[in-house]
Image (cartoon, rainbow, N blue to C red; front, side, top):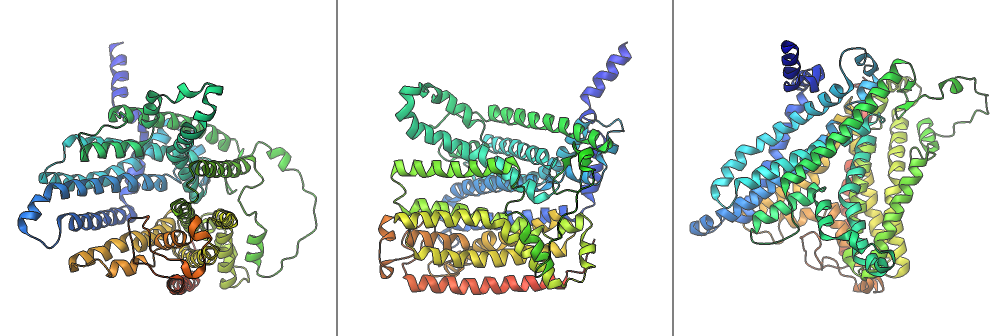
Length: 614
């Protein structure tokens, strides 16, 4: 009896009952993958570049030695804040990407059902996958600890801030990875998991708080006495909602470190971490139940992993009946282009969830319009710049993901060799894939076009913005599509192609400005230097310039000769004013450069089309 109790107690204390052999297997595989070491190298490289930029901007590269020493504490705070925010964002993105195929790979390769025939439980499968990836991300977080310890010598940085930021980041990473794993169970495509996980987290962290803030600011004062809901938005309920948002947590924690005497909304980071751990536990428990259900259906032959999503074949008997032959449709033009044009504009548009998602998106957009109208902020250019930056940012992400997965999904489905064995030319295949990627991005660009056209008709945006934004969207689409197709043809795995494509975008539009500013600071001059010229070809700055110069009630009704660009700063970067002709020239030159680069990537993909087939 005592031996049995002792054995049970030891089995509960040891973590192996929770992780099982899946954890050990994932660790052995991860240690042999070269991409994990490459990831750590680039992580350190990017972190070092950002820290160097902050150091030179705060501590002054040229100046008196005494003044530099007096600035050490301020420089230490800025560097620590940069490291904290960098790892907070980067590790969550990596968690979503690394767990986007955690369960779907097992389902697609028909190994999940075999795992259920062993003593391994579904909870061990889920926890083994999550904890193995979390350990890799924990190594990335541990890399920054020596740098944080060295910077703390400058003073002004309490250990409590480092500990609380690390815990907030770790729990946020666990929750983001758990959501990605849950969505990956019923979605085989990595890009679909990444996009849906991003939408879920964006809704949970940003959209829902904005809706509640709109209700609190505008609708409750109007309808509160009638509906008797004013008490629902009490301060303690707002504090509870704040503990569900790690972005608010990291910002509140940083604000306390930078300004210890300020008072804000109460935030207790241990409570926040416990809440996030509880949410992650709920998501993982739900995932374990779904994994067991999917595994049992795979064992009994009720699962069809060959579809784009992992659909459960409940109507298998009905579908097995012979289908009446219909009229054979004639292929007109290039076969791949014809096939992609016949696909629905939004994948899964016939399903109810797609209609619900589209209606929810339009409803939330309409709610923000109503809020802006009541606040009288739609007349200001800042509002339209914010919308434009949001749509362009989402468009770049969607275009990168879809273009980088056009060919790798064929390779993973083992249909790529069959497609290359047809009489189709390489040019026709790539053209069809490019058309497919562009069509998937049309809903996002459609939202941008709808916003601009709507407010052009209202008179809050000048019509010339339509022409300028068309140039911007054209070169973005060509460059991003060409880059994605190249890496999709080069790599065999979807995750590798997506990460490589995002690496190019981050290098050009995140690391590039940092390096340009670093060179300017070392040269002692930032005005009119390399950074200014580099930022003029940045898509975010171009979006800002277009909508800040042509947006607003005053600019919307102005003549073409009266439009001025570079007058206001939205992203913390300002320029000297210039006219319409200069703006058009900058956009045209940028478009020619990026379109030419995109074409080069397209031909590079054409050359590698018949290499690395599997």
